[in-house]
Image (cartoon, rainbow, N blue to C red; front, side):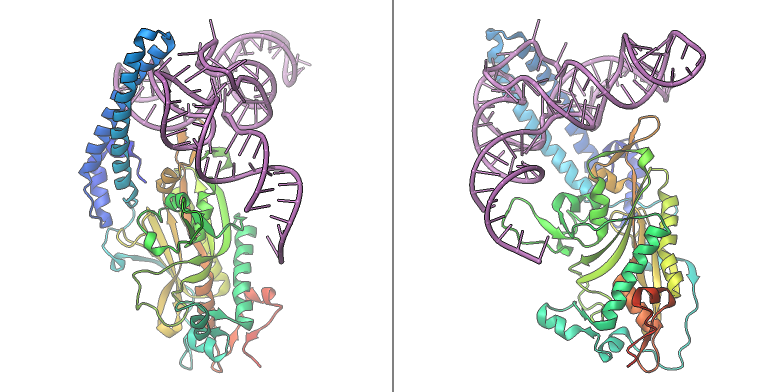
Amino acid sequence: MHNIKVIRQNFDEFKKKISDRNINIDIDKILLLDKENRDLIQKKENLEKEKKEISKKNDKSLFKRSKELSNLINNLTNDQKKKKSDLDLILSNLPNIANSDVPIGKDEKSNKVIEIKGEIRKFDFKPKSHAELGENLNMLDFDLASKTTGTRFVFVKKDLAYLERAISNFMIDLHTQMNGYTEISPPYIANSNTMFGTGQLPKFEDDQFELKLDDKTEKKYLIPTAEVILTNMVKNQILNVRDLPLRFVASTPCFRKEAGSYGKDTKGMIRQHQFHKVELVSIVSNDKCLEELERMTDCASMVLDKLNLPYRKVLLCSGDMGFSAEKTYDIEVWIPSENTYREISSCSSCGQFQATRMKTRYKNDKDEILYPGTLNGSGLAVGRTLIAIMENYQNSDGSINVPDALKPYMKNIKKIGDN
RNA sequence: GGAAGGAUGGGUGAGCUGGUUUAAACCAACGGUUUGCUAAACCGUCGUACGCUUGAAAAGGUGUACCGAGGGUUCGAAUCCCUCUCCUUCCGCCA
């Protein structure tokens, strides 16, 4: 969420920048509501002052006036709360604004490829898709999942399940042992306020799996990414700059409705309602966001380097970024069967946007209270890494070689499907 | 699921028979005095949010709210009432 004080001070600049994010909201109304809100606060507080003085005097002749004041204050407070909530509603639906070094553009066509790495394997046979490979091995079972659950779910079996688990463990070890992240095993369920903090609510409620609860007072959701729960670990608190940066890593299932992507990637396990992901989250002082974003992106790409998978790094344009991001790098891995790169990680700096929503602050050396920067990135999506390994490491007989880096995590099995 | 008790500033913890509480006191922290250095002692500072305001800025001044959250009673609520959340203890169930 944007800080209203900052908007107030640089309104024209703000209005111009927010328009790059493809939105259709009456921005001028913000200024009006803000003014009305503050005027009402002023009026209300003047009356509260008078009332307080009467209360101190404890003089019966003034009690009548005090009663009047209470009514006036009540009315003003109601008006003021209404203005404030109208204002907050607009603000909470506004996306973050793009950092100055982000290309302006409407969709992915304006994204910029920054780096291409790794060698694309030349096959002397026609590479199969992961779905074909997995079903032939009887280790991916989509039909079984439709029977027990529905579409966009999958059963992973036998050595492929082992491989999936190995991928996750390998990634966590890398980030905890080499990259300085602290491992967390978090809840997979978040409450509304937590979902608001990272920006999933209120705008993207349709994308979330909501749980049906006996208690109707609060809603709870399955996390669409561990970013939600890891970032909100610091919500509603004031950190000390000495404790920053905070770096967390977790491997969790993620649950997404994939609303609005009907007919997209229906075959295989590219786009599922449930998938595993190793997530990286950093909380940093507000001047370190971009620096940390580079570091985080390097941590994520390091995984692909070690797995010897070809990939490219893409800087997203203003129109293609997520709601909370100020700058995003996607890492895309080579998928032979599609003859293209597919997203396997998305690393974003959210600047102070999420911290403002979460009410997370920190004290710097001068005891000033500031909003920290928050960053999140996949390090990496486990399901898609599994796909990438299957397809890039496949043999003509349909078996799959285990990447060297993963062998220690799989009792040195060299090949999957080699019976 | 049943029963009981609790939630106060960074921490400990009074107040809780409504109006000298403007939330005491202690600890921690920070600044200072003293000191050869450390310690001790003494003095001072010591929350957050929002509004208004002085100032070029740095930095001030001032108002209101906040004692788990939200409502209510009252001229007046940390204190009384209601709802909710969370915590502790005991019982039951359970991986």
